[in-house]
Length: 423
Image (cartoon, rainbow, N blue to C red):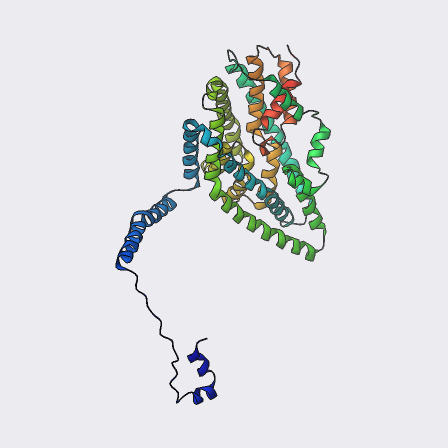
């Protein structure tokens, strides 16, 4: 507070000082800068504004208006491949940026799945049996379609024979190490994967199926609780789910950087030349996937009266994220968001999509079947029909949960092949 304002608020002091010559405002001294310094500063400001800042803002507005996340992901993939090929040493150093994206996705999943599933189940009725009927229908559909995927993989492997004439170079001890990680496949291990000892440990280990089980049990308990308790918990979980979907939007802004960095590190480590020896396997895989989509998925969509073009448009970004990051887990939040926008009820989205990450791994199981026969063909082994059916049965059980971990299919594949006797 200056002297003038202070005297104004004190009438007695103002009257006492009325006849005195007291300067109430201290004049400020204005120091002028040298003219040459002013000219240099104005010139620098002009250059920064006209040549850097203004073009940047205009470019940003243009791309914000005429591009979307898909464009930036594809652009980052191209840059990542080029950087990994021409500057592999520098590209490898970008791997932490790719890992950061996957870590952020992992952070989102537990609260997102739990809150949306609780709201979806407990917020749409008081019938516990409805949850059970939905679970039974979902699991039956998943297992039937997954079996078809395995069959397509085996048939394509026997028709195209991608492993004939392929020379595999590598250390066998690496495959043995992978096999040891997936030993002891049984119904007991599968059940333990569904029912966790501790919810927070399941969340820490990112066991999606265990999180779904806990959320479903919690929802059923809410349905059986009194109305006030149920209403309170629904409000809490609904608020949490809304916040988590906003969280997804923030993380997706980083997706092009994380995906481009991860792809650059992968290409910088392995090189593009690694694709030459496995080109027939990759071509056979995509041919099998196309056949699976055309002759199995699309007829199912037609029977269910699902708009095909609208569906593929809705899943475009989640598919691209999963493809470029080599992990379906990274696409889970975006897939749930897109299916809700597509018109699917939240109760179905919150239950079916997370469960599908353990039971409906069509692409992964198709690849595992194809790669198993490919490895046998490359090793000059002739697998009988009975042996291939045995592999098919093993993969139905052992493939659960591989979508959550990048390149986890390698572990399951090594474990499956290690259980087959040499012929």
